[in-house]
Image (cartoon, rainbow, N blue to C red; front, side, top):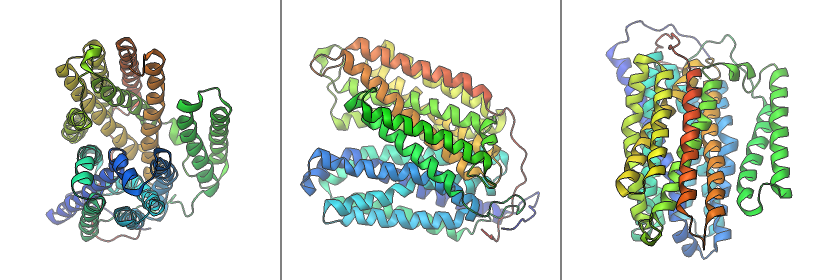
Length: 481
């Protein structure tokens, strides 16, 4: 790796290259997010196509999930150690292979292999933050973070909306091959821009902390397994208890290892900082509160109008409701980045979580269609704005050799928060359900829990940095990483 001094006033050509780099990343991220979100809405059709039952079909969702929780922090660390361009190139190739295998697999087993390869795609997110942290100054980094967050939301929303119609009216090949073409186009744009990602050699890691990486992977896989077993077995059954003990033990061991190795996966002292530790903590509550809202709304509106609160919405109609949250988030994320550039991530985080709490409250007090739309709009604005704040905080506040793994931890925290909160409110609905139909009181309590989680997140957002860390604008040409 090498260090290059940066010009104080970059020329138009470097500015154009930065724009092309961000455009390429945005295309890759939106397509990967779409690929990740296709499976659930398309799964019933795919089970019929391959002739497998629901239990077998679930393998297609479990396998990439396990891949994702293992790969995401490793991808971030690989980008920190070996360079973001090399890491991105490998991940893009794996995603392309996974998409093509998923598109043309003749048997279900091979389709699952394709999904496993696609699971590497989420690792592109922390790598993207390594890239933008290297090529943008501290102010522009917040805006660029908003763009990346917006593309993840746009891809996920688009995937949910179009997966069913495409697989039913066109084919599985079109469903998975079309995003692959976008990934290829984005990768071409990114590498054509030849972004400079050179960083200082001093303090640069030279190897991967495999012991720490293995322990973190065990902790994450055990946590995912624990969450997945709660619904079927309950929290006090042997399997969930064993998985929880394994997860806690692995986390404790990981922290112990990270404190002793010469080149840790992440310096645990970083997790005590406002920028990174605060971002990871707030990210957990973003995922939890937003996960509650987007889980409960489909449960509510799908019920019969005879319940007094349901709308009898079909899967397609439910997708259009959720599009309100996805659509507004695409707009709110980059705007939040612009605002954070002026006022700091603390304000954006607090306000974002406050708006998310308001959305959950609206859903708790009214079951009218307009109220549901307003709740989703608030949730989309709040979650996307707060996400922009925490990713910008982690990317801007981490050491230059820890950007990838720090933003990966934020990504994982959001996902785990969503999974844990969703399991919790699902149990609340089930406890009050009559004939499989949740009662209104249970729904309101669950939405209120989402509001409380968001309010806690707003309070914790006060721990985010109040001022941007000064950073020079890097050069654009050449790279040693």
